Amino acid sequence: MKTSQEFEDIYSKHWEKLYAFSFKVTKDSNLSKNIIQDVFTNLWERKNSLNINSVEHFLFRAVKNQILKHYNQNTFNTTSIDNEFDNFIMESPSISESDLSKTVFHIVDKLPAKRKEIFLMNKLQEMNVEQIAEELKLSKQTVKNQLSSAIKQLRLELKQLSWLLFPFFF
Image 1: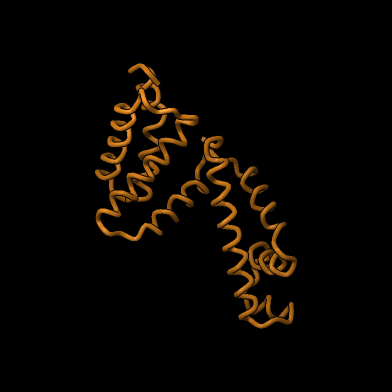
Image 2: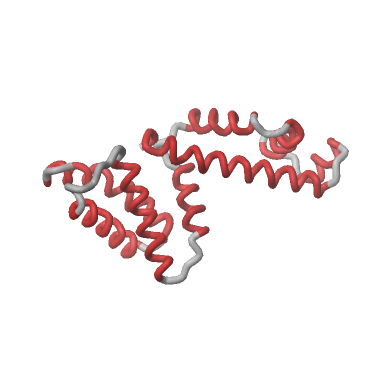
Protein backbone atom coordinates (compact mmCIF):
# COMPACT_ATOMS: atom_id res chain seq x y z
CA MET A 1 0.00 0.00 0.00
CA LYS A 2 1.87 3.00 -1.27
CA THR A 3 -0.80 5.42 -2.53
CA SER A 4 -3.63 7.26 -0.86
CA GLN A 5 -6.08 5.53 -3.23
CA GLU A 6 -4.91 2.10 -2.04
CA PHE A 7 -5.30 3.27 1.55
CA GLU A 8 -8.81 4.57 0.86
CA ASP A 9 -9.74 1.26 -0.76
CA ILE A 10 -8.48 -0.66 2.28
CA TYR A 11 -10.33 1.70 4.63
CA SER A 12 -13.58 1.45 2.65
CA LYS A 13 -13.40 -2.31 2.48
CA HIS A 14 -12.56 -2.99 6.13
CA TRP A 15 -13.68 -0.23 8.49
CA GLU A 16 -17.21 -1.52 9.06
CA LYS A 17 -16.11 -5.04 10.00
CA LEU A 18 -13.38 -3.64 12.24
CA TYR A 19 -15.84 -1.29 13.93
CA ALA A 20 -18.35 -4.12 14.42
CA PHE A 21 -15.67 -6.28 15.99
CA SER A 22 -14.42 -3.47 18.23
CA PHE A 23 -17.93 -2.51 19.31
CA LYS A 24 -18.86 -6.13 20.05
CA VAL A 25 -15.86 -6.41 22.35
CA THR A 26 -15.91 -2.98 23.99
CA LYS A 27 -19.65 -2.22 23.91
CA ASP A 28 -18.56 1.42 23.50
CA SER A 29 -19.22 3.25 20.24
CA ASN A 30 -16.84 6.17 20.87
CA LEU A 31 -14.05 3.92 22.06
CA SER A 32 -14.55 1.71 19.01
CA LYS A 33 -14.39 4.68 16.65
CA ASN A 34 -11.21 5.91 18.35
CA ILE A 35 -9.62 2.48 18.11
CA ILE A 36 -10.42 2.20 14.40
CA GLN A 37 -9.08 5.70 13.82
CA ASP A 38 -5.87 4.85 15.69
CA VAL A 39 -5.39 1.65 13.69
CA PHE A 40 -5.84 3.39 10.33
CA THR A 41 -3.71 6.36 11.39
CA ASN A 42 -0.96 3.98 12.40
CA LEU A 43 -1.34 2.07 9.12
CA TRP A 44 -1.01 5.28 7.10
CA GLU A 45 1.99 6.49 9.09
CA ARG A 46 3.78 3.17 8.68
CA LYS A 47 2.65 2.44 5.10
CA ASN A 48 6.18 2.57 3.68
CA SER A 49 7.74 0.34 6.31
CA LEU A 50 5.09 -2.37 6.63
CA ASN A 51 5.23 -5.68 4.83
CA ILE A 52 1.71 -7.11 5.17
CA ASN A 53 0.73 -10.53 3.82
CA SER A 54 -2.95 -10.31 4.73
CA VAL A 55 -4.35 -6.82 5.21
CA GLU A 56 -7.50 -8.03 6.93
CA HIS A 57 -5.62 -10.28 9.33
CA PHE A 58 -3.23 -7.41 10.09
CA LEU A 59 -6.09 -4.97 10.73
CA PHE A 60 -8.03 -7.29 13.02
CA ARG A 61 -4.89 -8.03 15.01
CA ALA A 62 -4.18 -4.30 15.22
CA VAL A 63 -7.70 -3.62 16.51
CA LYS A 64 -7.43 -6.43 19.04
CA ASN A 65 -4.07 -5.08 20.20
CA GLN A 66 -5.47 -1.53 20.49
CA ILE A 67 -8.38 -2.81 22.57
CA LEU A 68 -6.03 -4.75 24.82
CA LYS A 69 -3.75 -1.73 25.10
CA HIS A 70 -6.68 0.47 26.09
CA TYR A 71 -7.89 -1.94 28.75
CA ASN A 72 -4.40 -2.70 30.03
CA GLN A 73 -3.94 1.01 30.58
CA ASN A 74 -7.22 0.99 32.47
CA THR A 75 -6.36 -2.20 34.40
CA PHE A 76 -8.99 -4.47 32.90
CA ASN A 77 -9.12 -8.26 32.75
CA THR A 78 -8.15 -9.10 29.14
CA THR A 79 -9.51 -12.65 29.34
CA SER A 80 -12.98 -11.38 28.50
CA ILE A 81 -11.63 -9.60 25.42
CA ASP A 82 -9.89 -12.75 24.20
CA ASN A 83 -13.14 -14.66 24.72
CA GLU A 84 -15.16 -12.00 22.87
CA PHE A 85 -12.63 -12.09 20.03
CA ASP A 86 -12.92 -15.87 19.79
CA ASN A 87 -16.72 -15.62 19.87
CA PHE A 88 -16.70 -12.96 17.15
CA ILE A 89 -14.58 -15.17 14.92
CA MET A 90 -16.86 -18.13 15.57
CA GLU A 91 -20.06 -16.14 14.98
CA SER A 92 -18.85 -14.24 11.94
CA PRO A 93 -21.39 -14.46 9.11
CA SER A 94 -18.48 -14.72 6.68
CA ILE A 95 -17.70 -18.20 7.94
CA SER A 96 -19.88 -20.76 6.25
CA GLU A 97 -21.75 -22.95 8.68
CA SER A 98 -20.84 -26.11 6.79
CA ASP A 99 -17.11 -25.30 6.98
CA LEU A 100 -17.39 -24.57 10.66
CA SER A 101 -19.45 -27.71 11.28
CA LYS A 102 -16.91 -29.84 9.45
CA THR A 103 -14.12 -28.33 11.51
CA VAL A 104 -15.96 -28.87 14.79
CA PHE A 105 -16.88 -32.46 13.91
CA HIS A 106 -13.28 -33.14 12.89
CA ILE A 107 -12.12 -31.89 16.30
CA VAL A 108 -14.85 -33.86 18.09
CA ASP A 109 -13.71 -37.00 16.25
CA LYS A 110 -10.27 -36.55 17.80
CA LEU A 111 -11.67 -36.68 21.35
CA PRO A 112 -11.09 -39.87 23.35
CA ALA A 113 -13.94 -42.33 22.76
CA LYS A 114 -15.74 -41.98 26.12
CA ARG A 115 -15.33 -38.19 26.18
CA LYS A 116 -16.67 -37.99 22.63
CA GLU A 117 -19.65 -40.19 23.50
CA ILE A 118 -20.49 -38.06 26.55
CA PHE A 119 -20.08 -34.82 24.61
CA LEU A 120 -22.31 -36.00 21.75
CA MET A 121 -24.97 -37.30 24.14
CA ASN A 122 -25.04 -33.90 25.81
CA LYS A 123 -24.93 -31.70 22.71
CA LEU A 124 -26.69 -33.74 20.05
CA GLN A 125 -29.10 -35.82 22.09
CA GLU A 126 -29.58 -32.97 24.58
CA MET A 127 -29.17 -35.27 27.56
CA ASN A 128 -28.29 -33.71 30.89
CA VAL A 129 -25.49 -34.85 33.20
CA GLU A 130 -27.77 -37.07 35.31
CA GLN A 131 -29.21 -38.84 32.27
CA ILE A 132 -25.77 -39.48 30.80
CA ALA A 133 -24.40 -40.71 34.13
CA GLU A 134 -27.33 -43.08 34.53
CA GLU A 135 -27.13 -44.45 30.99
CA LEU A 136 -23.36 -44.95 31.01
CA LYS A 137 -23.23 -46.07 34.66
CA LEU A 138 -20.80 -43.29 35.57
CA SER A 139 -20.75 -40.78 38.40
CA LYS A 140 -22.19 -37.35 37.69
CA GLN A 141 -18.80 -35.83 38.50
CA THR A 142 -17.09 -38.01 35.88
CA VAL A 143 -19.60 -36.87 33.28
CA LYS A 144 -19.10 -33.22 34.28
CA ASN A 145 -15.33 -33.62 34.11
CA GLN A 146 -15.50 -35.26 30.68
CA LEU A 147 -17.82 -32.55 29.32
CA SER A 148 -15.58 -29.84 30.70
CA SER A 149 -12.48 -31.45 29.18
CA ALA A 150 -14.20 -31.86 25.81
CA ILE A 151 -15.26 -28.22 25.72
CA LYS A 152 -11.79 -27.03 26.75
CA GLN A 153 -10.21 -29.14 24.01
CA LEU A 154 -12.66 -27.83 21.41
CA ARG A 155 -12.04 -24.22 22.42
CA LEU A 156 -8.29 -24.68 22.37
CA GLU A 157 -8.22 -26.30 18.94
CA LEU A 158 -10.70 -23.83 17.44
CA LYS A 159 -8.70 -20.94 18.86
CA GLN A 160 -5.54 -22.33 17.28
CA LEU A 161 -7.32 -22.84 13.98
CA SER A 162 -8.93 -19.41 14.00
CA TRP A 163 -5.60 -17.70 13.33
CA LEU A 164 -4.79 -20.10 10.52
CA LEU A 165 -8.17 -19.78 8.87
CA PHE A 166 -8.97 -16.18 9.80
CA PRO A 167 -7.72 -14.46 6.60
CA PHE A 168 -9.71 -16.84 4.39
CA PHE A 169 -13.10 -16.30 6.01
CA PHE A 170 -13.39 -12.54 5.46
